[in-house]
Image (cartoon, rainbow, N blue to C red; front, side, top):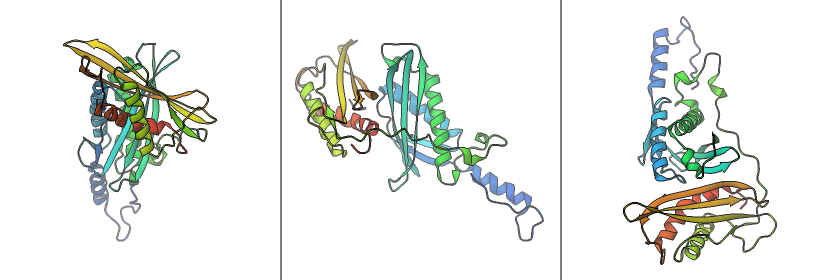
Length: 297
């Protein structure tokens, strides 16, 4: 169950002493814009595998239009890591996305985030996701990534409209500050067969703690909460579909987001000890959960 993101400073005109000719100007510009920035794409976290695979291809395709060569699982000048969250909203579904761009040393270059609202109520918000939605998110993500790279070298020529300076492009605004946390309470996981309630809950606590999150033992002032729910349903060929939703709540009970995981397993295979499966599931979800929590956690 592995789950288990150009400013061209040639100002000398033709005829200036010692300056470049008109032909060399356009030659230099053409060379600059023809270069493509190579970006390694880490596995998409939080989405069902089919959605993650489709979105990965959407990012690769959208990157080509923005002078970005996005390589899933490969090496690059930068690395793009991120996740998708699906939640039910009044009147529809909301797909939230957050992507971090890091350089070769691991330092964060930029963060891209946003939401895509899909009208129409469905039982499972992931069911509302289609190619149009994923292509829209991929386009917005790669446009902001291109604009955030040093010198804007990855921005496409066509992305700058006449009369619009390239410098106006920027990453998404930072979200409003969340209340300072006194810790995070992980509630017992609901609906898990076998020893899943205990093993999944314990595994997530360990992963959050390893990620620098302060754990709380009870509900007190300014304590955030993570609630896990497991849902199993029959699938063809002696299989079961398993879905794990991790709901993250702020101290007032407001939902900050949900990290969802989905996979198909042999029927009944989790009716006993979960063993390493619990740790793998918690490990795949922890990064997305941590990003929803305030840094002071």
